[in-house]
Image (cartoon, rainbow, N blue to C red):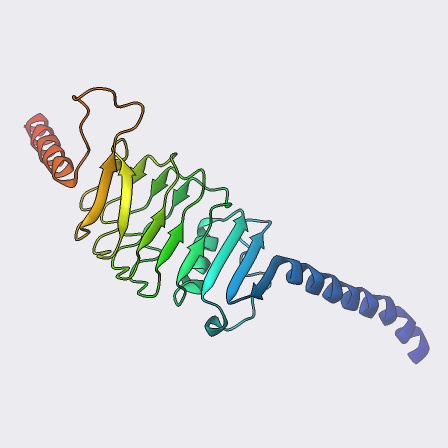
Length: 211
């Protein structure tokens, strides 16, 4: 009876052991640390932490490639809380969710995705030591207070980018450059004050319709 039970359980045990070995190899390919840099290739959205087991104090930089879900971005914000730089240039996303990196006082440099279109509200507000933000030409919108009080940030931004209210409030080194699409003097830069004025006009107009 014991021998029969052993013969029945043996294939199951081997399957489990082989599965653990396979997963371990996959994890090694997914996540590695070298020269104080954590590199993660995320094949499947939602699995950023699949193989991560290393304490935060063993790396200062993060490089992520592959695909990220909103949940992955939340995990990334935790992983990067004590980091000096984050590079997600080769991540296939178009939007940075709101408020994720807010208050990260260690962060000095952030390289954004190459196909980025929008940055969510409060995404990097109060990142007091953020100096460098490398943005792609595909960027269309920066959300409300996205970089508020990033007092060390030095950035040149296309004047075509739509700015939310107080997007760069407290930042003294933000500059705007004309693009090829701006060939006349009638082109204006969308500033936070103009957004506020537009909001007031819209509110008054909506109130008049109610009456």
